[in-house]
Length: 194
Length: 107
Image (cartoon, rainbow over all chains, first blue to last red; front, side, top):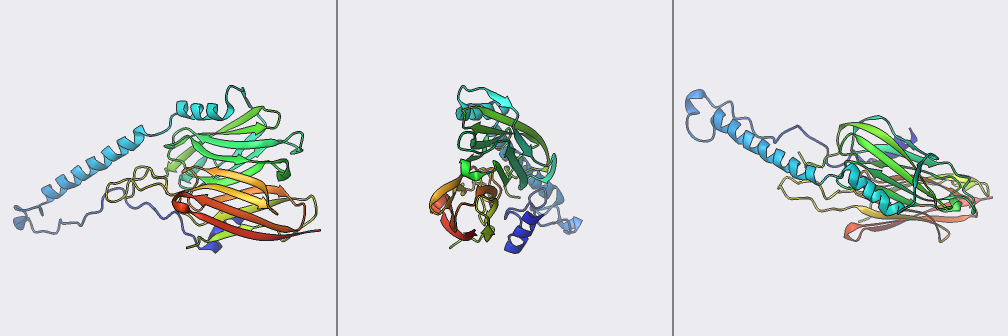
């Protein structure tokens, strides 16, 4: 829990874009007496109609962003871009991530790779990818034998419950991978500020 | 304006010991995919590169994407070889650039 302490001492609060209530906040106008509410925009009906239109707009914005999401296919394309035609084998790499996270805005992830980290045999790079964020790449790291231990921890954003994949490039030219499924209850907001 | 950064490097280490280094820097990491209150996309503003050097020699390099959480936190390892300084350099969008240093004594 040392990481949490670090954040605490820095006094940095959660991401600035903390999420508010579900919909657009409008002043409640229901207090207008019934007899006065037959004209103008202050009627309950007009207010509800306006709210519905607004909600429709928000839905539309979501749909637009949705189409910009990465898919398993784009993730595979991004992985191909890194490994080329080399085969990707499972093993040696371990992703340590909670299987169920509440807040997709900060998901702690640790990737470790089994390697003696000597000049002859070491991990050259570690890459991480995801399926459903707007972009498939998460992080790319370059290591040298000096690292002594091929392990990396960071915090990532996840826009949806999805699979994340870590790929390690070894000094002998082979690529190894591991994947993990994460369920996210509150996604990192891609649909907009509330 | 400099961002607040927090570096955790052991002050002392034995020669050849593998040490853990923790870094955290204050940054919004705005993805560029979110819509603001005016209906416009908020432009991307992220840290793209993080490099750590040990007495001038690069020991760790990371390329961040918008999927890195706000206030990027990175933990990695290195071998303590000699006394000196470990420097950390973050660069990003809108000309963001910051360097922090931590001394280390190796015996």
